[in-house]
Image (cartoon, rainbow, N blue to C red; front, top):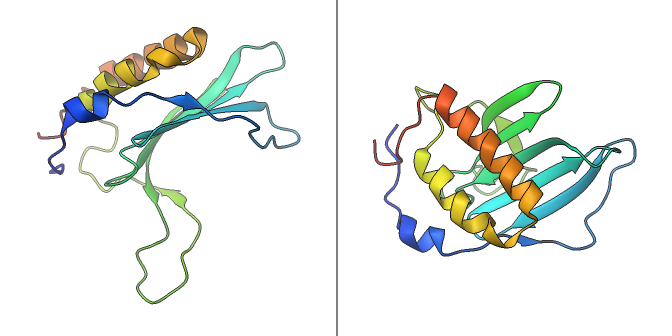
Length: 148
């Protein structure tokens, strides 16, 4: 897959911020939501305050993808169809779909590097946990660079 040119230095200068008053869904673990222009990070917190899972949506403006990790099921790496690809029709709700890549399990190393910088202002426990999991996924998926 050929990735669009990006200014990764510019992306790395953005910082995640935690949203306040995040809607909680009954019967699901509590959610914390962090975002910037490049990432959305949703973290599910179990009743014992441990991290039960997270979803990192990245490259939101160009080729949005989502890496989800859940304690009970592990990793899932998918593309985000934003619902806007149907001309002259109402926008549909975004949905997760298989990656449109010949290498769906590969995780761009650039994203890992940008996350490491962007997460510096958020809860250290959350940042460290997610970064370790991203590193784990990148190692098992033979990371690629966006310009590969």
